[in-house]
Amino acid sequence: MRYFFLIIIPLLILSSCKNKSLKLNEKDLAQKILSEEEILAQKEELRLKKEQELADSLAKLPKGFRFESVRKTDASHPPIVIDIENRMDSIKEFKLSDVAKSIEYIKMQNLPDSSIANNINYKYYMTDKHIVASNLYGIHLFTKNGEFKNTIVKNQLSGVKYKENENQVLVYYSEYAKIGGSPNVWSRGDQLYYNYRNTNTGQNYIMEVDCSKDLINTQYQFDPENPLAVSGAGKVLVDLNRGQNKPFKAPYPNGMSSFSPQNTYQYIGIFTPDRNTYFSRRSRKGNMLEIFNTKGDTLAEFTKFERLVNFKARVIRGFDYGTQYEKGGNYYFRSDYNDTIFKVIPPNIIKPEYVIKLGKHKVSKQDASHPKFDLKGKIVPQEWADGKDFIFIELTADDNYCPNSRKKNSVRMLYAIYSKKNQKLNFVKYDPYNYEMDLLENDIDGGFSVWPSSYMVNRKNNIMVSLLGRDIKEKVNSDEFKNSTAPAANKEKLIQLAKTCSDTDQVLMLVK
Image (cartoon, rainbow, N blue to C red; front, side, top):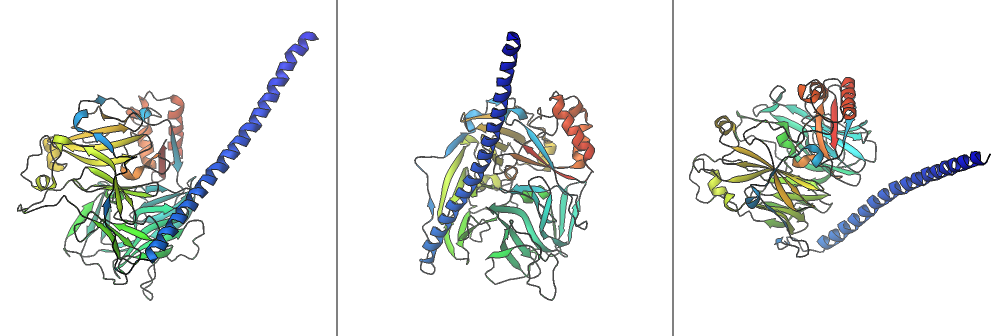
């Protein structure tokens, strides 16, 4: 009996400790969830307080008042210098597991409106509580699990054609008209914002949508009897035309343009950091940024120093379009052929956050724009994705990136990763003449290689990759996937996901 008690007592103690530990873990988890909600609430309360303070300050200003435009460096937090010039030989092999730990896939529920085409990948944006999916055809709201909640705006288009096999949008200006929203959205708390335009009436608004409410009375179709009624959800926050609407007129009425949908995802030309101000990079004066109050009065404008002077060439070569992105509710941008990324602080400050040190590899806008200037040895920043621990940088070297330079193999594509923790830059080991980018190799589940663009990093610093069901099916049937040495259990999850997908299912891949 003694031995029986010696054995059973430790078992009872172990069982008791396990149950107690389980209860503690559940309690700790509940407390952690509550704390996260409290943190969000506290941040929102602080943001609203600052917003009101700015509103009170702006209300006291005399009509026509302009602030002094300030380019301000914080001495306690100077800009981070990313040294391209002296790190060209620092080449390292990277795989996805070097910058991420896990991957999650969220299968998005199909839209209930079958009249909306489903042949273009979504651009994803994540608020604190929702997933927003947008593309050429409109903007839609989902839960964090991918369940459809509401359509924000259903775009009505004419003179627009999507060539699926080439991933190109064709716009024919003789027939062009659009009523709807831009795919670029942003948020604060439960409020979602988008740019609404009606080319027939000339309306151009920043719209505000309360995502905590059901959008049951939203009008999605244009009403010819009430042409100024907004065909979309929300209320007008800013009238960008200040009531002076002019129908759209193409500069070349019989012309056309073409672009990939992803090109539109990268450009944020209009942004509201609060309910008091908005920014615009669509300057008619050649400024790199202008800050306005919600009535359209200019509060500050920032001169662009990279300009063409006495430029006599008949053709302009352009291939640096700058960078712009939102991070933590703040707007960041780099003007074309500039080496500084600024953070905008309304109503009148731009603060240098990063400086890209190119040294002898830097090229001026004047030289880069001239088609006869030799770009050999010159480097120009292109893509920029700002994550929590890493910054992903894409650059072109020796030539501009275009069909001719690719055909001649005269342009090099360079990819670099800056570690915020180690404060070091390393170039990714990669064939610079391989223009079909295929990195970083996915050794987590053997699936898709990942190299993020600026719009692909969400507020939790996860990388968002937009996929269609057919992409996943093709991937799991590829030799690359079958030969991958990624963990078998992770590969099997992707195989099972492929079995549940139709070709047109939209899937959000989260790299964490």
